[in-house]
Image (cartoon, rainbow, N blue to C red; front, side):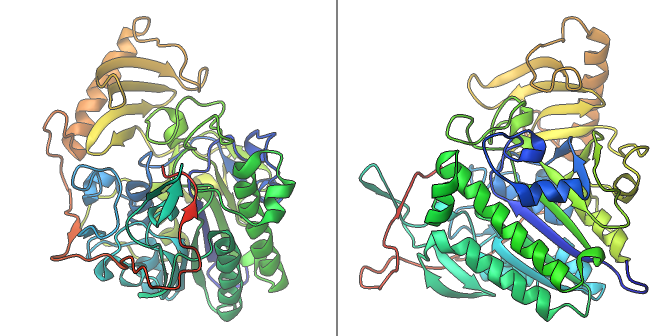
Length: 461
C-alpha cells in the first residue's frame, strides 16, 4: 500500500450466486477466469456466511453488521423481502459501511441492486452513499410475462441517486451500464480513498444477457449470467491496473445468498439446500478477498466468517469509528484476512435465522437444526458435522447427545441475546425498522408510456 494512503475498497455482491457456481469453488459448468484470478491473487473463504437465505435481510445485515431481527429486517408484513411501495426500510439512525467510511473521508458510491427500502427516506443516498445508479429492488419485480400471463404490477425503475430516470430498462444492457459507471467512478476518485459497492442483478431471475454470453455459455442462460458478471469483473480489475490502483485496493467478491435451484444451471454443490433454506446451500456463499501485499495470495481459510464482519473489518482497515451505542453481531476479522494460515474465527457460535425465528446454530464443526420453516414445518433436533459432512447428509443427534446438549444451551443463549419469534424470546439490543407514512411506489404503469421493454420475458421467483 502506498505510504499515507488508506486503501480503496471495492465490494462486489452478486444476486443468488451459488457456492458451486465459480471455477475456484469447483464449478465445471461456468467459465469464470477473472473471478478465479481474484482467488489466485488473494484469499478464498470456504466457510463464509450471509445472515439470511434471502436478499433484503441479507443485504441489510451486510451493510450494518447486524442480524436481520436486530434491525427490524426479519420480515415485512409477513413476507421475507421488501416489495415495491412498502413503508419499510433501513432506519435513519443505522450506521452502514458507506456512512462510516464517508465520515472517515472516503468517497462512496453504489451501483446495482439496493433492496433495503424504496421510499426516498431509505435509498442509498440517505445511508452514506454519495451517488447511486441502480434498481431499488430485485430485477424480477418489474412487469414481466411468464407462460402467456403478465406478472408484476409496476414498471421496474432505474434510479440515479433518488430520481427515476428510466422505466423497464433493457435488462441485458444493465450490467454493461453498471460496469461503465464503475469505470467512470474509479477514474473520478483515483486521487482519494473510495468505497464502491457494486451489487449485480445476476444471476437472479430472469436471466437476460447479451447474445455474446448466451452463445459462449456451456450452461445455458444461467451460465451466461455468471459469465456476464465475470466479464464485468475483468473490466473493473483491468481499470484498477491501468490507473495504478490495484495494490491500493481491497477487492471483496461475494453473493447475497445461495443459488435458487440446483437444476436450472445454478448449483450450491457440495452443499445441501438452496436459497430460502437454512441448509448450508442457502447461506454459505463464495467470498474472495484480494489486497496485494497485505492478504497472502493463493490462500484459503475454513474459519467461520460472515458478511456481518465486513462493516467492523472495513472500518478497522480505514481507521473509521463505529458508534458504541448499539449491539452488532459482526466482528473485525482483519487478522484472519492478513494471516489466514494461523488466525482463528472470532465467532464462537453462528446463528441461522429465517424471518425472526432461530432455525439453527453452528459451533465449530457442529451444526444443530432446531426449527424448519419449509414443509413439513416444525421443531427438529438434527446434528451435522460440517467438516466431515458439509452436505448435511447424516444426522448425528442420536450418536452425539453431549454435543446436542451443549448446542441446545447455546441456542438458549442466542434466543436471550438476539430474540426468537418461535419461542417469544424478545432479545436484547434490537432496533426498529424504518417506517414512513403513506408510502407510494416509485413508478406506476402507464399504458401510454413509451417503455423500451413493455414486458420482460422470464420467470418470477
